[in-house]
Length: 509
Image: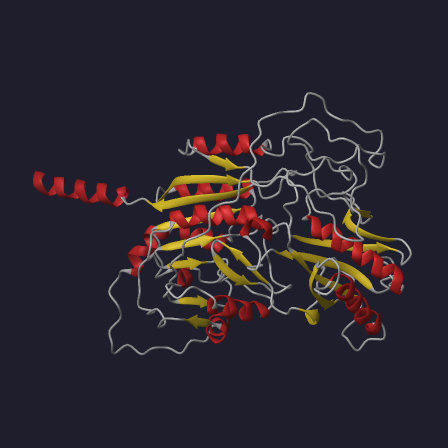
């Protein structure tokens, strides 16, 4: 699709720290009493009737440490110290040096209260609900009311949900029996509030609550409890309450006994239907069923870097948009987002319900720049093979077209037909299918360093691509994981050398 990236807002302030702890705290048990958490870098204003501070003990003197009372009991964080620079950064730096990039940079981003999207298990009892993550390697849910990674209003919304569970006698899910009411909850924070100064929007984000209900639909016997819980959350945390905390409440209906959190049926219960966020200078709509980055601030910084890597006016194939969309509601979100694009973005933008692993050449052809954002396992082998062999593909693409008298066969491949039927073309005329150009720039966004290294080595092996730039981002402080933004460019020197050598041979003859 043709996409001209617009200008973005200035980046949020970064936290920089180079201190390391002189001692490492040890515990006799994962559940033994931990020291009190220190205040986060920006003080959190208390919410009426919601008390979140577990202690008033003075903060720890160790900077860039997690300071979380739940560390070692839940599976969310694996590293307690040096949040600003996890050890994997050194591994990434060494790798990029080995492939010719000596100026790899790393943005530490926001170290605490960065998570704006969380999926949490609901277990325990109606009198004593447990809302949190599983203990590492088990299905034992751990309560995490003071999580230091969560946006403060996620923690506040969890406390409000617990209050509603107790008051309305909502039964948390029993995993062994497959019974009871509430299985999981997703909390998603939107900081989109143009009535507030930009500096206050993050702190005052409000929460979209998605309740995963153990029933087939809203007509099930326990549906009244669901509506009562939604009304409770809205009454206590909606815009007319003392503390406006809740953006909206949604229901997802799931009765499967597998580990999949969401079912296929969604229903909007109360509050605002549309969920907006501003990232990369663009307003975008996001349904609760769609994938969204948990660390919106870090993602915003990455997009600013990415924008500078795309030449103005380029035709861009964003394969994270063109991959399989199991939930068709993303199509509506796409249309809403495009409707809000600034008027100066006069481009041809398309959305497709398709699988890029099937005939990937048909998706990348006609694009100057390809953006890939694969899952942790890396690129699909068929797409990786297409990019790896792009030079030979370009030769085929430029071969003379068939005679006009050649009979055109009807398209019968079901995946191509489905993609055409579900596609959405916005703003400009559809790009001509006759375009035979292939991308000159590949932008690879990776959440798995090991898979990226394997893909990178293969892309460089035939010298069709060279790695020009690489950046790292701290999307998940407290874990052994970083996000990578790498820019590959096509290398045409091989073809030029062949031509020159051919000319010299002619002269000798």
